[in-house]
Image (tube, rainbow, N blue to C red; front, side, top):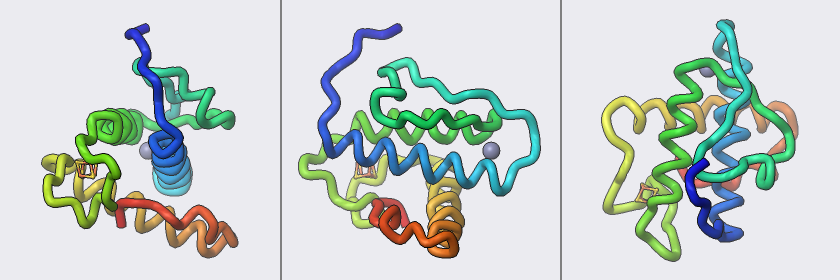
Amino acid sequence: MVKQREISEKEKDDIQTLMRFVGIYCRENHNGERTPFSFKLFDIKEIEKKEISLCTECTRLLTYGLTMRLKCPHDPKPMCKKCETQCYHGDYKAKIREVMKLSGVYMIKHGRVDMLYHYFV
Ligand code: SF4
Ligand SMILES: [Zn+2]
């Protein structure tokens, strides 16, 4: 495991949000094989107790999203959609927007409006 750094409370909130949104998206949209998600930069169980299982594509997307969040140079961090130094490249940007949108709709339908404060849509 890579040497871990201190993660701020704001980073933890964002990481938890990303994990939950990608987890819902994968569960609701992908039927293939899923494996439990883990992340080399820190023990995600310290942030999100509930284990999530993801397909290969969603594992790649979440790994990218968490990495970008931890590398974010802004403090305080703006909402990503309003950020002037967009860091998501290529397909990742469109993909994460789709995830946040579809999982956001899912949460509204399931009464989880509290989860809808987030930073990508
Ligand atoms: S898009 Fe901007 S605010 Fe969002 S993680 Fe990247 S650099 Fe930070
Ligand atoms: Zn998936």
